Length: 342
Picture 1: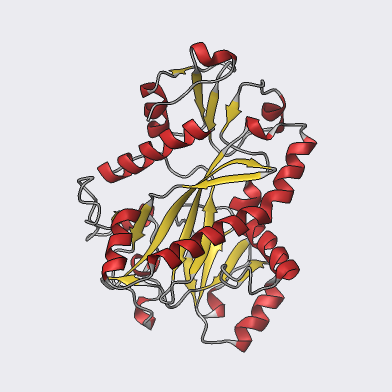
Picture 2: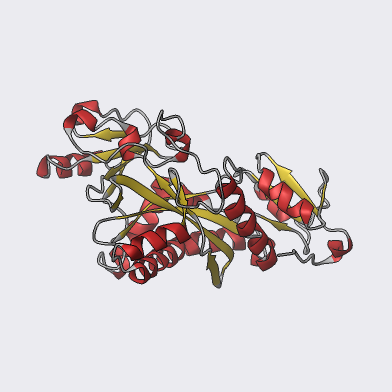
């Protein structure tokens, strides 16, 4: 679909891309009549995660940027867990029970050690607090392997993932937020199903084989047996599927996909609500209008064998590159819809 310009720059809308490589963003805007600029007189700016407070303060009324101030309250693993933990304390753990048991180290080291001693058979996954693309992640069963020299997040490993053809998978769910006060969010119906490249196994000899346990594309694309999608129409071929292909497959195997997606939408709304006070406060501090900002988040969700969705992380500035025709089709359509909504 085409994009509509707005505001004083509507006669010749412009866009600026800063501190990020986003070729699909560039291609989508250019194909719809936007002209690229390097000046501050832009209609839309698409940037990497580091926008300063001054950049927000000097926005003109007609300008829009792709980040809310304080968005890292959702996308830093340690901050996200703190907000969700507070909501669970306020509204009940049974309502906010979609994040695996999590500890932020070294701050919660003593609590983690007590849990570890109570449940020695649990398996854990350790993640740097502000990393992406699977960097620095490892599996933990023996406490002797844990070093707490830097801030990290330790999560209980979801041991019973829903499998397809013996492979673990997760979902990259795209969520567009156009306002936090009031909260206004859109969940894109299409997205990417990302598979691990080796059969799932928790045997001792397989614990540190990340090709079995992680679904990150950036990791699995280097696996010898990784299969890249080559045709948009063949969206159920290889180690990356569309949501449409996933839903078709699950329905054929008797899975209640309506229930699964309803639970995922519930998870998304509650996660956004957990960070709304912090982000709204930051916007008030900067005396900003919510209409100046939008955010396209990448929610990474794992579904277990009981169709319970688990939130793994929320990504700031999810990749807008394409390594396959399926990537290009999904992300370019996503961006066209997103820009029309903002």
